[in-house]
Image (tube, rainbow, N blue to C red; front, side, top):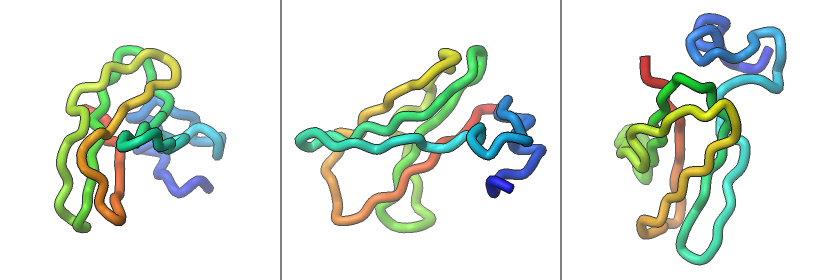
Length: 92
């Protein structure tokens, strides 16, 4: 009931029975002109963090973020528009 399919949770290595477990951005913080995103990762997995200023047009912030088995922080120091979207992709 967390909005993530069981198959997607299987691929991400998260617990489909726990709503606290899905792969998603846990926090977003801003310091000066930098926005920092944090999310939990699994060892042996690789992630890409993407941004979007215009829906449907995504670009990489960090293309190859290695999983650590813990919380990872990824900064976005590009010029900040009025509104920006972020997402995490798990490499197959």
